[in-house]
Amino acid sequence: MRSLYARGPDLVFAGGIFPPQPAVFVDGGLKVKGRWSWASGCMGADIVGVGIAPKNSDGTGGLPRMAVMPRSAVTIERNWDVVGLLGTGSHDLVVDDVVVPEEWTFVRGGKSALDEPLYRYPTLAFAAQVLSVVSLGIARAALDELRSMGSRTSVTGAPKLGERVASQLETARLEAELRAARSWFYDAIDEVWQCLLAGDDPAPEQVSMLRLSATHATRTAADVTRRAQMLTGMAGVYERCPIARQVRDVQMITQHAFLGDVTYQNAGAMLFGLSPLPGYL
Image 1: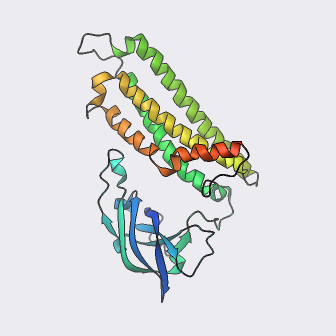
Image 2: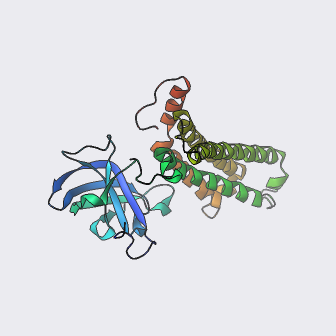
Image 3: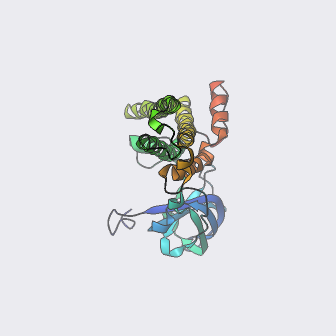
Protein backbone atom coordinates (compact mmCIF):
# COMPACT_ATOMS: atom_id res chain seq x y z
CA MET A 1 0.00 0.00 0.00
CA ARG A 2 2.82 2.41 0.86
CA SER A 3 4.48 1.70 -2.46
CA LEU A 4 1.22 2.11 -4.37
CA TYR A 5 0.44 5.53 -2.88
CA ALA A 6 4.01 6.72 -2.43
CA ARG A 7 3.37 9.77 -4.62
CA GLY A 8 -0.02 10.60 -3.15
CA PRO A 9 -3.64 9.38 -3.24
CA ASP A 10 -4.47 10.62 -6.75
CA LEU A 11 -4.02 7.30 -8.52
CA VAL A 12 -6.19 6.04 -11.38
CA PHE A 13 -6.72 2.29 -11.75
CA ALA A 14 -8.24 0.48 -14.72
CA GLY A 15 -8.26 -3.12 -15.77
CA GLY A 16 -9.48 -5.92 -17.96
CA ILE A 17 -10.28 -9.23 -16.31
CA PHE A 18 -11.68 -11.29 -19.17
CA PRO A 19 -10.64 -13.73 -20.31
CA PRO A 20 -8.37 -14.70 -17.38
CA GLN A 21 -5.07 -15.80 -18.89
CA PRO A 22 -2.73 -18.53 -17.60
CA ALA A 23 0.22 -17.27 -15.59
CA VAL A 24 3.24 -19.17 -14.30
CA PHE A 25 5.32 -18.67 -11.17
CA VAL A 26 8.90 -17.60 -11.89
CA ASP A 27 11.65 -15.94 -9.91
CA GLY A 28 10.25 -12.62 -8.77
CA GLY A 29 6.56 -13.41 -9.13
CA LEU A 30 4.17 -14.40 -11.90
CA LYS A 31 4.92 -14.12 -15.60
CA VAL A 32 1.92 -12.56 -17.30
CA LYS A 33 1.13 -12.68 -21.01
CA GLY A 34 -2.04 -12.24 -23.02
CA ARG A 35 -4.83 -9.94 -24.17
CA TRP A 36 -7.80 -8.64 -22.20
CA SER A 37 -10.88 -6.81 -23.44
CA TRP A 38 -13.12 -4.04 -22.06
CA ALA A 39 -10.53 -2.17 -20.01
CA SER A 40 -12.67 0.89 -19.35
CA GLY A 41 -10.69 3.99 -18.41
CA CYS A 42 -7.35 2.53 -19.42
CA MET A 43 -6.32 5.62 -21.40
CA GLY A 44 -6.18 7.69 -18.22
CA ALA A 45 -4.87 5.02 -15.87
CA ASP A 46 -1.67 5.15 -13.81
CA ILE A 47 -1.77 1.43 -13.02
CA VAL A 48 -3.68 -1.41 -14.65
CA GLY A 49 -4.80 -4.85 -13.65
CA VAL A 50 -5.39 -7.94 -15.78
CA GLY A 51 -7.11 -11.22 -14.99
CA ILE A 52 -4.90 -14.25 -14.52
CA ALA A 53 -5.34 -17.92 -13.60
CA PRO A 54 -2.04 -18.96 -11.96
CA LYS A 55 -0.91 -22.51 -12.65
CA ASN A 56 -0.15 -24.83 -9.72
CA SER A 57 -1.96 -22.53 -7.32
CA ASP A 58 -5.52 -22.23 -6.13
CA GLY A 59 -6.74 -20.79 -2.87
CA THR A 60 -8.98 -18.36 -4.78
CA GLY A 61 -12.23 -20.29 -4.55
CA GLY A 62 -12.37 -20.48 -8.32
CA LEU A 63 -12.16 -16.70 -8.67
CA PRO A 64 -9.58 -15.10 -10.97
CA ARG A 65 -6.68 -13.05 -9.71
CA MET A 66 -5.80 -9.60 -10.89
CA ALA A 67 -2.17 -8.83 -11.63
CA VAL A 68 -1.41 -5.14 -11.12
CA MET A 69 1.34 -3.33 -12.99
CA PRO A 70 2.30 0.17 -14.16
CA ARG A 71 0.50 1.54 -17.19
CA SER A 72 3.88 1.64 -18.98
CA ALA A 73 4.09 -2.17 -18.87
CA VAL A 74 0.95 -2.55 -20.97
CA THR A 75 0.16 -1.94 -24.63
CA ILE A 76 -3.30 -0.50 -25.28
CA GLU A 77 -4.88 -1.54 -28.56
CA ARG A 78 -7.43 1.12 -29.41
CA ASN A 79 -10.25 -1.04 -30.73
CA TRP A 80 -13.24 0.37 -28.80
CA ASP A 81 -15.20 1.01 -32.00
CA VAL A 82 -18.78 0.85 -30.73
CA VAL A 83 -22.11 2.63 -31.05
CA GLY A 84 -22.15 4.26 -27.61
CA LEU A 85 -20.19 5.04 -24.44
CA LEU A 86 -17.20 6.00 -26.57
CA GLY A 87 -15.78 8.06 -23.72
CA THR A 88 -15.12 5.01 -21.56
CA GLY A 89 -12.20 4.04 -23.81
CA SER A 90 -12.74 0.34 -23.11
CA HIS A 91 -9.91 -0.84 -25.31
CA ASP A 92 -7.93 -4.11 -25.22
CA LEU A 93 -4.87 -4.53 -23.01
CA VAL A 94 -1.89 -6.51 -24.29
CA VAL A 95 0.85 -7.75 -21.94
CA ASP A 96 3.96 -9.56 -23.14
CA ASP A 97 5.84 -11.58 -20.50
CA VAL A 98 5.73 -9.06 -17.66
CA VAL A 99 6.80 -10.44 -14.28
CA VAL A 100 4.44 -9.21 -11.57
CA PRO A 101 5.42 -9.73 -7.89
CA GLU A 102 2.86 -11.95 -6.16
CA GLU A 103 2.13 -9.24 -3.60
CA TRP A 104 0.91 -7.13 -6.53
CA THR A 105 -1.87 -9.60 -7.24
CA PHE A 106 -5.22 -10.00 -5.55
CA VAL A 107 -8.27 -12.24 -5.79
CA ARG A 108 -10.96 -10.46 -7.74
CA GLY A 109 -14.20 -10.83 -5.78
CA GLY A 110 -12.43 -12.25 -2.75
CA LYS A 111 -13.09 -11.29 0.85
CA SER A 112 -11.56 -7.96 1.83
CA ALA A 113 -8.81 -7.78 4.43
CA LEU A 114 -10.61 -4.74 5.90
CA ASP A 115 -13.51 -5.70 8.16
CA GLU A 116 -15.65 -2.59 7.69
CA PRO A 117 -19.21 -2.27 6.33
CA LEU A 118 -18.07 -0.77 3.03
CA TYR A 119 -15.69 -3.65 2.38
CA ARG A 120 -18.26 -6.30 3.27
CA TYR A 121 -20.74 -5.02 0.71
CA PRO A 122 -21.56 -7.74 -1.90
CA THR A 123 -18.89 -7.35 -4.56
CA LEU A 124 -20.67 -8.64 -7.67
CA ALA A 125 -23.81 -6.70 -6.84
CA PHE A 126 -21.74 -3.54 -6.48
CA ALA A 127 -20.12 -4.20 -9.86
CA ALA A 128 -23.57 -4.30 -11.44
CA GLN A 129 -24.80 -1.24 -9.57
CA VAL A 130 -22.00 1.05 -10.73
CA LEU A 131 -23.27 0.40 -14.24
CA SER A 132 -26.93 0.90 -13.35
CA VAL A 133 -26.41 4.36 -11.88
CA VAL A 134 -25.02 5.48 -15.23
CA SER A 135 -28.24 4.29 -16.88
CA LEU A 136 -30.34 6.16 -14.36
CA GLY A 137 -28.35 9.34 -14.93
CA ILE A 138 -28.68 9.09 -18.70
CA ALA A 139 -32.44 8.57 -18.51
CA ARG A 140 -32.76 11.51 -16.12
CA ALA A 141 -30.87 13.71 -18.57
CA ALA A 142 -33.04 12.50 -21.46
CA LEU A 143 -36.26 13.44 -19.66
CA ASP A 144 -34.81 16.83 -18.75
CA GLU A 145 -33.89 17.37 -22.40
CA LEU A 146 -37.36 16.29 -23.51
CA ARG A 147 -38.96 18.86 -21.25
CA SER A 148 -36.63 21.57 -22.54
CA MET A 149 -37.81 20.78 -26.07
CA GLY A 150 -41.45 21.15 -25.09
CA SER A 151 -41.73 24.84 -25.91
CA ARG A 152 -40.05 24.72 -29.31
CA THR A 153 -42.09 25.51 -32.40
CA SER A 154 -42.58 22.58 -34.77
CA VAL A 155 -41.32 23.03 -38.34
CA THR A 156 -44.47 21.27 -39.59
CA GLY A 157 -46.81 23.72 -37.92
CA ALA A 158 -48.03 21.12 -35.44
CA PRO A 159 -48.65 22.09 -31.79
CA LYS A 160 -45.57 22.44 -29.65
CA LEU A 161 -44.35 19.18 -28.13
CA GLY A 162 -45.32 20.19 -24.60
CA GLU A 163 -48.85 21.13 -25.69
CA ARG A 164 -49.69 17.74 -27.19
CA VAL A 165 -51.87 15.50 -25.04
CA ALA A 166 -50.01 12.37 -26.15
CA SER A 167 -46.69 13.94 -25.09
CA GLN A 168 -48.08 14.99 -21.72
CA LEU A 169 -49.44 11.52 -20.99
CA GLU A 170 -46.30 9.67 -22.07
CA THR A 171 -43.91 12.06 -20.31
CA ALA A 172 -45.77 11.57 -17.05
CA ARG A 173 -45.58 7.80 -17.49
CA LEU A 174 -41.84 7.97 -18.19
CA GLU A 175 -41.24 10.14 -15.13
CA ALA A 176 -43.17 7.72 -12.91
CA GLU A 177 -41.43 4.62 -14.29
CA LEU A 178 -37.95 6.05 -13.90
CA ARG A 179 -38.59 7.32 -10.38
CA ALA A 180 -40.08 3.98 -9.34
CA ALA A 181 -37.12 1.99 -10.68
CA ARG A 182 -34.69 4.38 -9.04
CA SER A 183 -36.52 4.16 -5.72
CA TRP A 184 -36.38 0.35 -5.60
CA PHE A 185 -32.71 0.43 -6.63
CA TYR A 186 -31.81 2.61 -3.63
CA ASP A 187 -34.22 0.87 -1.26
CA ALA A 188 -32.47 -2.45 -1.94
CA ILE A 189 -29.12 -0.79 -1.27
CA ASP A 190 -30.30 0.78 1.98
CA GLU A 191 -31.69 -2.53 3.26
CA VAL A 192 -28.33 -4.25 2.76
CA TRP A 193 -26.38 -1.27 4.10
CA GLN A 194 -28.39 -1.18 7.33
CA CYS A 195 -27.72 -4.89 7.70
CA LEU A 196 -23.98 -4.31 7.34
CA LEU A 197 -24.02 -1.41 9.80
CA ALA A 198 -25.63 -3.75 12.33
CA GLY A 199 -22.69 -6.14 11.91
CA ASP A 200 -24.70 -8.78 10.05
CA ASP A 201 -24.15 -10.41 6.69
CA PRO A 202 -26.90 -9.77 4.13
CA ALA A 203 -29.06 -12.77 3.32
CA PRO A 204 -28.76 -14.31 -0.16
CA GLU A 205 -32.27 -13.06 -0.92
CA GLN A 206 -31.20 -9.50 -0.12
CA VAL A 207 -28.18 -9.79 -2.40
CA SER A 208 -30.41 -11.14 -5.15
CA MET A 209 -32.62 -8.07 -4.84
CA LEU A 210 -29.53 -5.89 -5.32
CA ARG A 211 -28.84 -7.70 -8.58
CA LEU A 212 -32.47 -7.73 -9.74
CA SER A 213 -33.12 -4.07 -8.94
CA ALA A 214 -29.93 -3.09 -10.77
CA THR A 215 -30.94 -4.94 -13.91
CA HIS A 216 -34.49 -3.59 -13.65
CA ALA A 217 -33.21 -0.03 -13.27
CA THR A 218 -30.96 -0.40 -16.30
CA ARG A 219 -33.66 -1.88 -18.51
CA THR A 220 -36.19 0.72 -17.37
CA ALA A 221 -33.78 3.57 -17.98
CA ALA A 222 -33.06 2.32 -21.50
CA ASP A 223 -36.77 2.02 -22.27
CA VAL A 224 -37.52 5.46 -20.86
CA THR A 225 -34.73 7.08 -22.88
CA ARG A 226 -35.81 5.48 -26.14
CA ARG A 227 -39.46 6.42 -25.61
CA ALA A 228 -38.42 9.98 -24.84
CA GLN A 229 -36.60 10.09 -28.16
CA MET A 230 -39.68 8.80 -29.97
CA LEU A 231 -41.70 11.73 -28.63
CA THR A 232 -39.26 14.19 -30.22
CA GLY A 233 -39.84 12.91 -33.77
CA MET A 234 -37.12 13.74 -36.27
CA ALA A 235 -35.59 16.35 -33.96
CA GLY A 236 -34.28 13.56 -31.73
CA VAL A 237 -32.29 11.75 -34.40
CA TYR A 238 -29.83 14.54 -35.23
CA GLU A 239 -26.35 14.20 -33.74
CA ARG A 240 -26.69 17.70 -32.30
CA CYS A 241 -29.60 16.51 -30.14
CA PRO A 242 -28.35 15.10 -26.81
CA ILE A 243 -31.10 12.47 -26.78
CA ALA A 244 -29.62 10.76 -29.84
CA ARG A 245 -26.37 10.15 -27.97
CA GLN A 246 -28.19 9.27 -24.76
CA VAL A 247 -30.14 6.52 -26.51
CA ARG A 248 -26.96 4.97 -27.86
CA ASP A 249 -25.18 5.20 -24.53
CA VAL A 250 -27.96 3.76 -22.39
CA GLN A 251 -28.59 0.86 -24.77
CA MET A 252 -24.92 -0.08 -24.49
CA ILE A 253 -25.26 -0.63 -20.76
CA THR A 254 -28.06 -3.17 -21.23
CA GLN A 255 -25.57 -5.33 -23.15
CA HIS A 256 -23.34 -5.87 -20.11
CA ALA A 257 -23.16 -9.44 -18.82
CA PHE A 258 -23.98 -8.34 -15.26
CA LEU A 259 -27.29 -6.90 -16.46
CA GLY A 260 -28.45 -9.59 -18.86
CA ASP A 261 -31.49 -11.84 -18.81
CA VAL A 262 -29.55 -14.34 -16.70
CA THR A 263 -30.21 -11.97 -13.78
CA TYR A 264 -33.93 -12.63 -14.13
CA GLN A 265 -33.26 -16.36 -14.38
CA ASN A 266 -31.22 -16.42 -11.19
CA ALA A 267 -33.52 -14.11 -9.25
CA GLY A 268 -36.52 -16.12 -10.38
CA ALA A 269 -34.91 -19.39 -9.33
CA MET A 270 -34.25 -17.97 -5.86
CA LEU A 271 -37.84 -16.74 -5.56
CA PHE A 272 -38.86 -20.38 -5.99
CA GLY A 273 -36.37 -21.48 -3.33
CA LEU A 274 -33.83 -22.85 -5.83
CA SER A 275 -30.10 -22.17 -6.05
CA PRO A 276 -28.82 -19.58 -8.55
CA LEU A 277 -26.06 -20.21 -11.04
CA PRO A 278 -22.46 -19.83 -9.77
CA GLY A 279 -21.20 -16.25 -9.78
CA TYR A 280 -24.59 -14.60 -9.27
CA LEU A 281 -24.26 -13.82 -5.58
